[in-house]
Length: 391
Ligand code: PSV
Ligand code: MN
Image 1 (cartoon, rainbow, N blue to C red):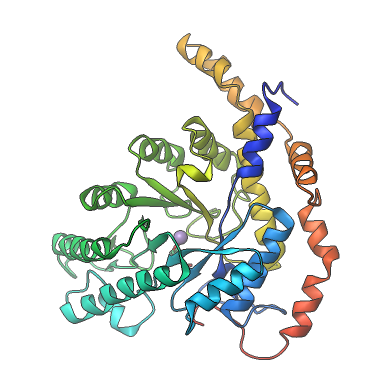
Image 2: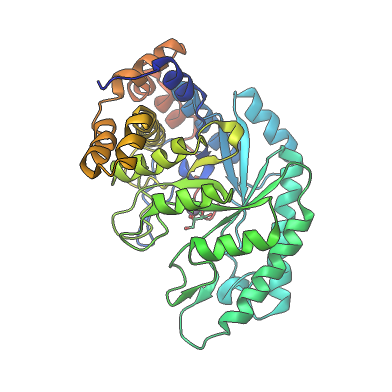
């Protein structure tokens, strides 16, 4: 292992790290061609939260779970929050869903029909009401809005409509609540998306005020995009609110974070560490947004959490002083070597120690497999409709 100047501080940072898991990652989800059902999948939001609590039990760093409304609609959100607390976790970001009603065929908040826009904005306001009940801090907005054909609607008018809905929603935020705006280059709209990139999201957040910040979903960029640059830029502007971590090979593949390109995840976490933005007190919500179609879901979420931890540990090992010196001296190869030395370090023994010192099993996936939880949920959840993207 490379020389670690302050191994205690590195371990402390790793112990303090927080990663939020998505309720929908525990349900059935997949591609538009096929969603493969799995045994033991949750049927209710309560059961999804139980799975999230299980991930936290074995990793120790995933104490909150994001909800998606209406997929996680319940009558009593305060009771759901108590259920989560009883299981040792909290409810995190509330994700809005203005993309699955027939009314939204031509868009939600940017729809040319004011009635549809009203309905969509009302859903965003309803989500803030849910946050009031759950105590959630973050309202997460992603709009599928966009156009399939040139000329289909007026690009600029749609920006005005978007700004109006965002303004109304922002004004409704309560004390301590924030708005996170996610962008996506493509899909389901194929010609033009209304919030296609970080620049558009950033400009809208800037207009709104300090409580509106950008979400970077790692799967939502053109191939080859330098995501760590976006991270560095938004951090400098104090406008990075959250991540939706996942992996992509080609499009929005939603594979496990760190699976396709662990080096990219390291480069992202390197910018986070560089800005001292890892600590939960800084306010970035490090979320996963994934779907596990062919792999077992709970161990896949555990593996993803571990992948983020590994990238983070490597970023914490970067010798900042040596890097700065090499950079200032114009030592191109030296600077690059400092970064690569950290990336090429096997941090698994370090993380195993961190877990053991926290009273956890050093191998969370193996511990999960031994725990009997999978067998238990397969027996308990044998009947009834399983949760999925539409339920
Ligand atoms: C859209 O592709 C997205 O990344 C948004 O975050 C949605 O809320 C989520 O996926 C749902 O799976
Ligand atoms: Mn996302």
